[in-house]
Length: 121
Image (cartoon, rainbow, N blue to C red; front, top):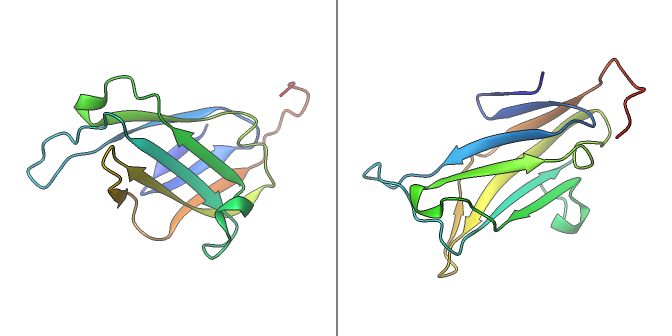
C-alpha cells in the first residue's frame, strides 16, 4: 500500500495515489485557494531543471478552495517511473502571484516495485 510518512511518499510503481493537503495561515485559519495553482514536482536531483522532472503536476481544479484543502492525485502513468528515491516539493502560486513552498526541504518520494506485473497500466 502507498503511504505518507513524515513528508516521505512511498508509492508502488504504476499505481494511482491521491493525498490531501490542508493549508492554514499563522492564525490556523484556512488559506483561500481560489484561483491558485498547486505544483507537485519530483526530480532525481534537487538541482535538476523542472523540464527534467520525473513527475510534474499542475493542479488548478480545487473542489472547495475556500477551505484551504486540496487533493493531489498522481495517476498510474505518473508513478510508472524507475524504482528508486526522488526529491519532491509542493508549491502554491495564489491568484495574486504570491508563491509559497508548503513542504519542508528534502522531502522524499520512494517508488517501490509491485509484485504483480500482469495488471495493465
